[in-house]
Each structure stands twice: as C-alpha cells, then as structure tokens.
Amino acid sequence: MRDLTKAEEQVMQILWKLKKGFVKDVLAEFEDPKPAYNTISTIIRILESKGFIGYEAFGKTHCYFPLISKEDYSKYAANNLINGYFGGSFQKMLSFFAKEHTMNVTELNEILAEIKKNENENN
Image (tube, rainbow, N blue to C red; front, side, top):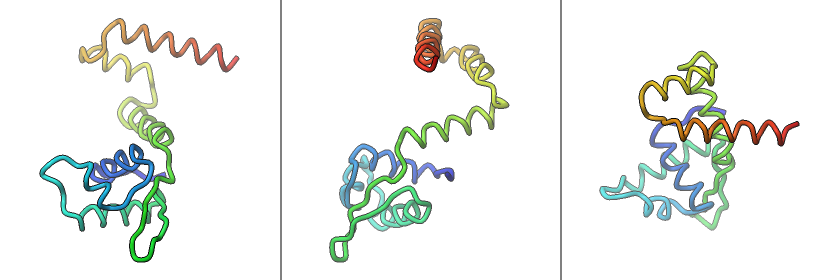
C-alpha cells in the first residue's frame, strides 16, 4: 500500500463515507470554497492508478468506489506513524501523547480496557 497525500486522503474520506459516487458527488461534499471539478477528477484518476479506487463506467461518466477499506488504510497509516516517529513502540507513542496532555487518565484506562478485551478475544 502507498501513502496518500492530504488531498488524496480527503477524497478517500469522502468516498468511504459515500461508498460510491461520481466526481460531482465527491465535489459536493467539500466545504466552500470548493476545489475545481478538474482538480477532483485528477485526484480520483491518481487514486485509481494507485489502486485505491475502482469505477463502473456509464458511457463517458464513471461511478467511483473504494477498493481499500478505511480500516485497512487506518492500520497502514497508524503503523507508519508508530514506526516513523516512535521507533515502532506503541508505549513511546502513548507516553508522548500523555506528556503532551492530549490524552488523559480516563482515555488511557479505556485503551487498557480495549487491549485487555482484545487479548481475551484472541486467547
């Protein structure tokens, strides 16, 4: 899997939400000021070449849909974040967020509960 640019990720977020859509449908989801139709069309073609989206042809128009799930890309992006900035250590990442005060004790306890739940389900 390849990284997405910020613009590509915006388009993918919209397609994951819509499940499928034409360029005009994707464009309609952007806030004002909206990007140009041709800009979105170009980004969609790039995403298609990267293997992130497919399409169904209706004459000269195409209805696009995600080929990569949001969950799969989230896992990929999270692993890149942990490996790229925290040396592959989930503990270092949590410690960073705790030190930066962007995570509180309640949130840490919820994460621990989720980890324990996943361990119990996998055993």
